[in-house]
Length: 186
Image (cartoon, rainbow, N blue to C red; front, side, top):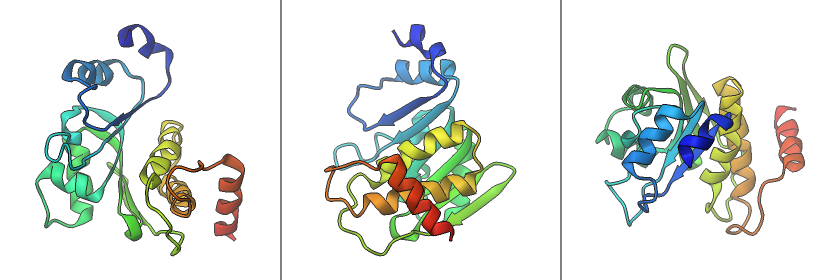
């Protein structure tokens, strides 16, 4: 089925939670056939060390958190700037974001370098879903060619809004996000 439908899509967004549904065969197919492949491979207590982003030999965009990036590279001491560059090389990613919780995010494009983007709130109610909100808004931005410093800004705006919502009670809607971004730019 994937082989048949992949050519019909401009972007494929993979959220790999490590439950085994995304097999090596599926990964190979996605890496080979997707026009634009955005990937997030999450590490959690059920898959620690077994669901690393490095199982993807190619991605146009990788978005993971700092502990996941360090685990994938087996490196807890290098600077975050070194980590993001090594990660980009390892998975042949054209663009990479490492989210860092209250430290904002770091975005990277080979040949253009890194940008640090701060957080936009100090009011945190619940962090559940903040990374997912970041990924879901930044992936299409990257696919459209938005510069990475702006991608990080937009993603952190979505994340700032999401951490003020308990659990998954509601999602981030377009108009409130646009208003929040406009307010930040003033």
